[in-house]
Image (tube, rainbow, N blue to C red; front, side):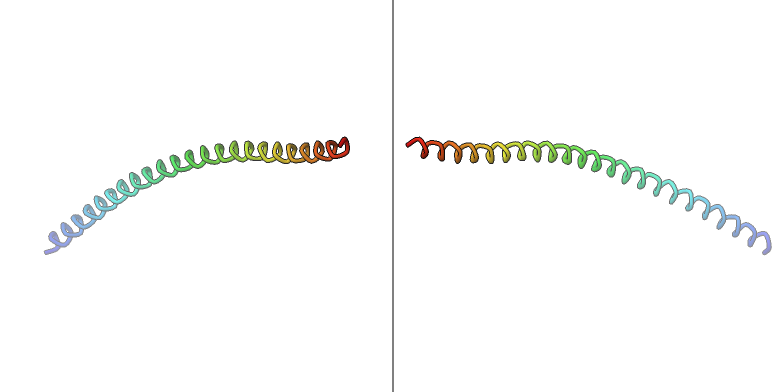
Length: 84
């Protein structure tokens, strides 16, 4: 009877070690996949941020050109009216 109990405990300990090892490997691979996906998303976000910054700069340049064109038009209109 005592040998059966010791053998049973040995089997339980070995099974626990195997299960623990299996879960460790599973979580390690899952974490690696999540980490890789995170890095990909971070890279995509960086690209989008760079493109957004470029587009914002182009939009600001266009806006400033429009404002300057409106001011030039007003100046030319006022000078034209003075000449007439």
